[in-house]
Length: 192
Image: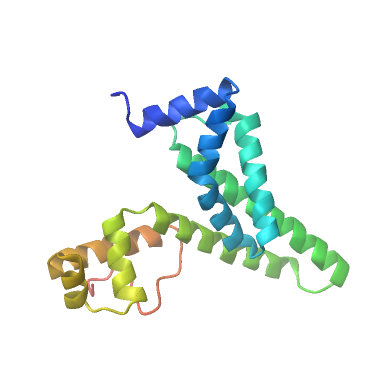
């Protein structure tokens, strides 16, 4: 491992947190708070609840940095996983409390809601983590409704390269069990 690799930087950040270095927590927060808040908001659809999850995640990272093992996954993945689990936990707790108070909805409906929110949050995470060229191709083709020729021209690449990027991007989304963008073909079809 060469100095300066992402794995080395993640290990150094964990070590700084283990040493109780407050500046490390600030750097960690600056780097990942938008991701944590976005994932939590996607699951909970509530600003205050997303703020609470964000505080909880960074409190956990500060109090228990040894829970992160650099060799197993990236620091970003660990933080995102903490956010996802805490948001789903909070959604279940608030959904169960609402059910108890109002008597509306079943446990099955609550679990379906949790599953939909968790899948959407995983998809958001995958999209934000995917390489920029894949994300740009997906954005142009599905959000801006450009065909392959227009997308290729906008990106300055061949139509074949656009097809490859779209196929890879959709395959990455499929791993999350995520819904495909509207109008998108199956991730594994040859239609792209």
